[in-house]
Length: 438
Image 1 (cartoon, one colour):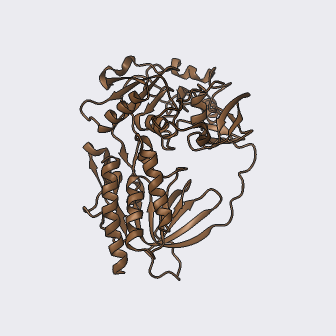
Image 2 (tube, helix red, strand yellow):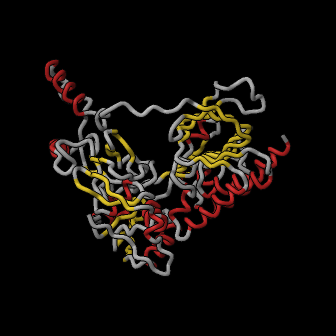
Image 3 (cartoon, helix red, strand yellow):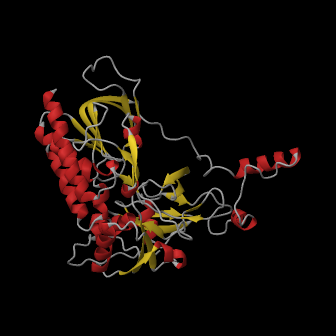
């Protein structure tokens, strides 16, 4: 399959060797070429494959939207494992991939008839409840059709035993705020044990969606390592369990944080926690906003500026005129500088927009603060409609009503990468001062 990559040019487009070694993997019986340093979703997009699965209820076509592991619309089956997020799975040679949640396949899915049979919507809770026999038949049918994906071909690989680790400070989220906060803490307290966690394969967060942002994120990550900060990538915080703790670390905050690492689970204790979890991508309400080829604006930026993947020669940016984002202008200018023809459209006029092989539709919606972890740690949340919705509540220095928890960046209400970095740096200094005081 033919890939469309931006050519090398003086604007700093990534040369092919930076993508890693070329390789081939199997996608539903067809060979697809990819590179070792890109994800399955990126490789499939580059090969012209947009449709990755079907929705569970109406079996409408689905494709990657956020490219950050947040939305769940790019679930595929990989090497016999169901529900793999294509945007988080690095490609490898001889990988076998297929779309799921469709019969007989995602292109010709007979189950999409549900959309035709119930044009006004399906209330599946009350279907076929008039008779006992009819209800029993319908329940059996629903059980066969329900769920997402099918069971794995073989048991999951066994992880190693859980590990218990202790740090002075744990920062969750390696975006602009997390990078800046971690660096400020380490600079102020060179002997402190600082851990920075992120579920992505590279640090940077929303910096990776900005023109030249990837280079800045790389320099920040290098500075962190030089300061001795431990950086865990491809690691997901499962939650914080306040009732669990050891008896040997009296100086630590109550509870343990469970972190899913690539090959084991780590139970983490710390004196202080800093939540820099950023914000999720959101969509805007317009007809067919869920079809493959419609992506979040920051996802478009991550692929073009971070992975140097030309999504399409033309792009339509859909925006809400009542909630204009500065990022829309930066994305438009960045795309145009690479030769992409860009048009902008208010959401009220977007009902006729159609993505395709030569056009991507990028939705510029206000990101929603990822407040779940601070909330679980006991930090109160409040509604800030103008800044994305519910967000963590804190003082200007990032301190919260929970003595051992600080917050910084977009989790406090969307502020964008530059302001998030400034805020993270200031909060990091406060945390560093708290450590010095003991």
